[in-house]
Image (cartoon, rainbow, N blue to C red):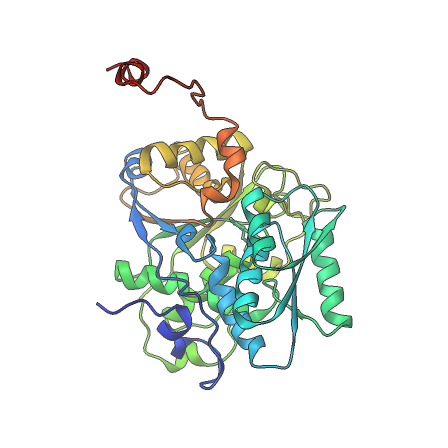
Length: 365
Ligand code: F0G
């Protein structure tokens, strides 16, 4: 076994980067595909989790940031900008630091989990807290990129989806072919579009997000594509409502988005795969987060648990075919937002004397 080299070196022939382009990597990708027997038993299918919280900054954003920042590092740009609900800014700040670029992040004030905010700060980003939501922040970031010498690294930058598509490649590489169903949370809708792109290119087909002929130049590595099942939070579910949501609200702050940028690509993923996009409540999200931690051993942030909450709801409704192969992407690490997780858990705060008696007493031994 050789060490994992990051998504660009691992999948270079399937990425639209020039052979001599700089490679900015923190070793992203190569994340675990973990079987989840506790979910398989509940769902009546075989369920795996693609644990994207294992990326260098703790979310799937690192895949797309590796390609976007590598592309920008080969230009004369000195500053990058993004709007973010937290993970994009954490990742952009880290990759920009690595590349020697200045990073500006435009954030909805008071709606970023503490861990993510800490990441942007320690990596030296310039923070702008806006009295508005993510959709306002993205509008402003786009304006900055249009009118000033600043490169946009949100997922409307096509190099972002190119990097993120590699997660689908990894799943096929491990399972031997595409799963039957792929479930993931949907916010700004870049990631569902990127997975759909990746699955299709591996099967030898292009999608609207394809950038060059690499998809058809290479031998197909998969015989089929999965159905794409997207999951939104009920208070921030524009795809379920069929229209934008002016005041999105959910405990899963990462997907607190009402006007997703990749609307058309995500709808194509849903339609062309015979898939669906549904909504779950905040309570379902937090229950799924607790179940994943307590029974599967994987601590994810609330937005990530939305995918599992959606799968459980569909299983309950009898909508998951028996023995289907199902992959759920859990997009971000639970350590990014400990406040939300601990807000529900029962924690013992009693402090005891440093004696064996006192400890065994507490443990009931
Ligand atoms: N899960 C997590 C943990 C996220 O951070 C995001 C998006 C999503 C799911 C949804 O992915 O936007 O591609 O549909 N976070 C962005 C950010 C918006 O700014 O970090 P999407």
